[in-house]
Amino acid sequence: MPEANRDPWELSSLEDLLTLAAHMEQQAVDGYVALAKRMRAMTRPELAAVFEVLVAEEKSHLSKVVEWRSTLSLPVAREIAQAPEELFDDEGAGIVAPELLSAYKAFSMAVRNEERAFVFWSYVSAHAQSDEIKKAAERMAREELGHVATLRRERRRAFHSERDTMLNVGQETLGSLDARLALHLRSMAAKAVGSTGSAELQSLAQQSNDRGKSLGDAPFESAPFTSKSSRSVLESALPLCELLVDCYLAIGDVARNDREAERARTFAAQVIHCLRALRTLPAAELASDRK
Image 1 (tube, rainbow, N blue to C red):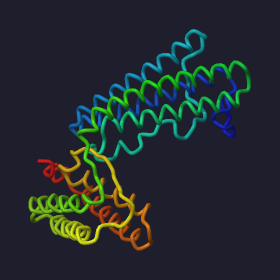
Image 2 (cartoon, rainbow, N blue to C red; image 1 turned 60 degrees about the vertical axis):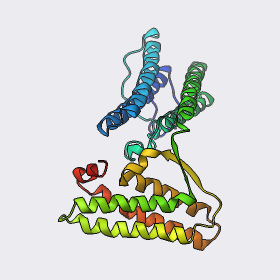
Image 3 (cartoon, one colour; image 1 turned 180 degrees about the horizontal axis):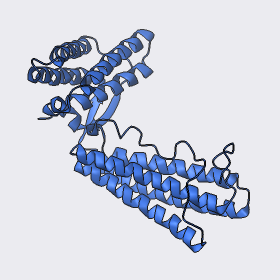
Image 4 (spheres, rainbow, N blue to C red; image 1 turned 45 degrees about the vertical axis):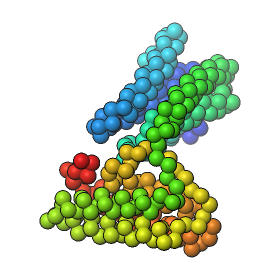
């Protein structure tokens, strides 16, 4: 097995290589299974179906590795001593509001994971200690390249099917989005009358309303900013907050001057505080915002 002080792509035997390959594929399977379960629990069956497609794809990859081991009469894969730190990355899909996800974003995440795997196996081949390891790593790299091509095709299909239904967010709409957030927060505060969170929700609603008015009176001067997101983000406060944080942080990054950047980041900080408050609410109160 790889030594503790050896780089993860420096493999000493074909058994090590196939053990690591099986580990990488299993981690991807586990990651997509968890995401599919979360989407089912969050009543997003269409996204659960996308992640289940990815589960099936990764299981197919894993079965090829297992079959390869079998043809070489190698024992069942054991635990590995060392592995790359970022074998699979869900890019926040496990915690972000599901309304901010889409089939296009899911396939984009999968593409990036496969591209990372391709690069990894390319490093294994480049640092191979034997021709056997080099050829095996090259085979794995070719497999990953094929996976990348397949998932890129799926991503293109998803993009074309979604592009006409996506919400276009520009600077001119940020004020209206914050005004919509204020309406959600006021509605939630009214339903939570008597609870400790009602007053805070009212305060956050007023702050959101003030941002909306501020943007109506004085829009950002920076270069035009656009973002795309599912229209379902408009339906409840939590995903709308997450979208606004991303928008304000992006504007802060491209601001033409320090004053503009500070204003955008101040707005982002305020919405982050709103996110924190929403995430501490009981599930029933959050669910009432979706009705």
